[in-house]
Image (tube, one colour):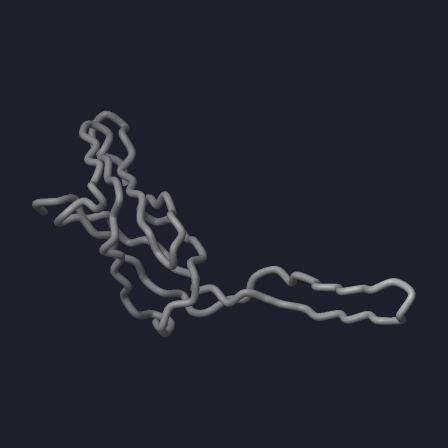
Length: 114
């Protein structure tokens, strides 16, 4: 979504201890949320928001700003192999791990005062 002048609206949000730069219509994977597919998710911890003309930086968050997204359901991340080995003792241990994520599509970025 672009406003006049071709400037892009974006926000930096925090979810699950990680920060994401999001724009409208963007799809991203965030840490697992309790949101079934099709449910609306709101990210209230907006650290920064910009509409191309003005930029507001929060301390620590921007009051009144939020990001509204739609959940696309749970997904699994890339498999990580954990292999432990001790030499001379025939000790080997192999495990695999796939992180759980929730795929969301950002619907809109709500500026403070809207």
